[in-house]
Image (tube, rainbow, N blue to C red; front, side, top):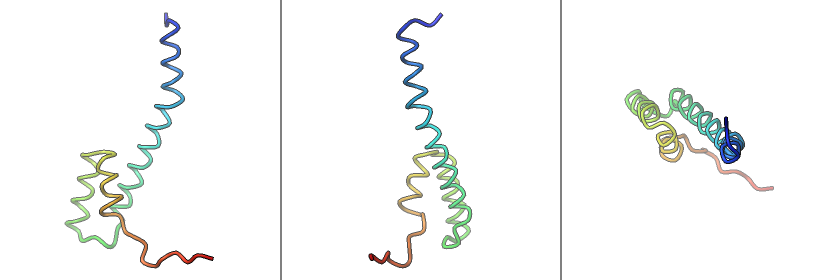
Length: 79
């Protein structure tokens, strides 16, 4: 039987931890697909980034997002 504190912990997990885990997983998949399809990378770089993302999980995906992810070529125009 689950005591009162256990129910609260379960609710917190369902409301906060589970959505965060799903968001991190979606981000990981997005960065993995981006690395595989990135035409700006050579084959060696592409393989290296895929391995970094696969083995470092969300940390590798975060590294790829800030370092290896293609940047916008044209600046956004205000107005």
